[in-house]
Image (cartoon, rainbow, N blue to C red):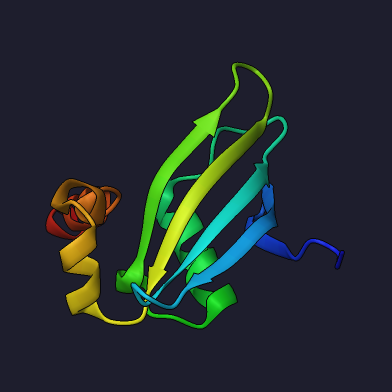
Length: 113
């Protein structure tokens, strides 16, 4: 088994890729990561999306974070992420609320700033 690949999520958080599977039928990559953020809050979806998109080499709008689970006080989170090859495929399989989740903070910040 090869070593887990490490991804820098933010200054205080790093992630290890536990499972990377390519689903060729659907046209997406399915990724499970473990994020280590001991002593700091759970990284935002935007931070994780940005780190995964640079790791995979895909556009940020094709990355969907399905879920992030953090144990109480643990400082370790598990995330499930889908990276699509095309926007059309993404819109067929992912619910709109998941696609838009994490983008609201960005649009509110732009409107007020």
